Image (cartoon, rainbow, N blue to C red; front, side, top):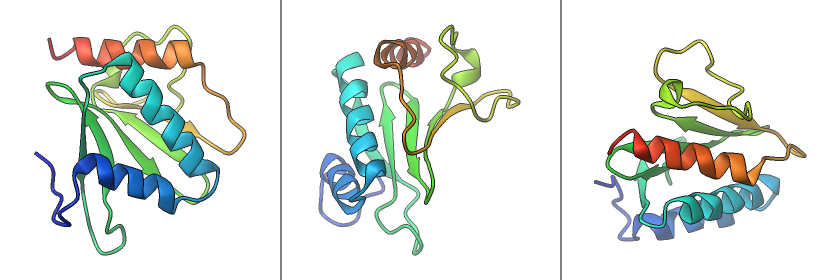
Length: 131
């Protein structure tokens, strides 16, 4: 369930977050959102962890459980896979939180590229953990 209290749907709020980020982070988050939807057409978008310093909250993609979150920082975009430690990553996309027992993350900085095929495979693998 979403923590949205604005009256917008979670997908509308994710769109607002992307629009508010009028730089490379917004463009990249939009691309990743599209790749997530391609990999799992029945994905559910949610918004969690609203707070005064982040009133729009954090985009969350789920399907039977949290697949990943999309957090934006000044210098990077972080996609955290809730159960990433259980996912094979032959392309080596995970580059953050590698010592954790449960989560794994992908940090992207301006100019970083992502292998779309490998990313969609990670999304599918994350969804399969909940089946």
